[in-house]
Image (cartoon, rainbow, N blue to C red; front, side):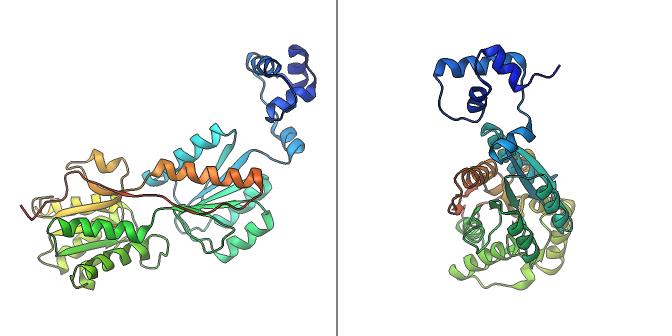
Length: 335
């Protein structure tokens, strides 16, 4: 038989109210009583009923997380950080795969509304007007991760994509490269596509290197598109010594396309990626890349949304640091 809060109170010889206060982190009992209640809960295997908990404090202790693709390594790493920290704070996570084109977003927002979730983490997708209208009716805190929004009531957690891309290209320039191509993300994507391309252009300009549109090919941040983009670059451009890819998956696809044509990395062509997913260190040669603290992005997003849930106050946005992770795919032309 599944134990109830009444059973726990009887076994611990305290009131039901005391058990409830312990479960909800309230005061009004001694440490000895607290330890006795906790031990009784553990011994009996008691789990608070979610509906009863909601009726008690108007919270379900549940956070909705919306990702356009939960199967890629970037999303998996961020989601791991979200789940780990949410569980540490006593919250459950309901993950919604909205699909790359976001065509399931409105449906999932309705699902989260019906589930009475306490807050939402919205990842790697533009917060469109229709989404915002639905979220306004839900009246729950929203935090963006790896996305950005101009509404001060909707804080975000992300790296500075333009600066990170700038630093990647500057790294190649510092290694003696001047003929640098880019495999950029989706051209119209304001989250990662546009700012990463701008960082590439700015780094070239600041170092006296002319920008050539023929040295830019576009992908969708995934492996196959990186391979196809690399093939396009090799067809239309000669003399390129280095390629900056706006994601690690595209960088690995580019490396494979080059190697199939007998182009060696890094001896003939240097490659640098973006994200520092596990794949970047598992391949050979190991990929030099822009490192994002993916687990920390998830943890910081959860911290912000829980703070907003529990205090009712808006928290500031956060730009997290990035780094250049040096491995084996960039040749130093100065030596």
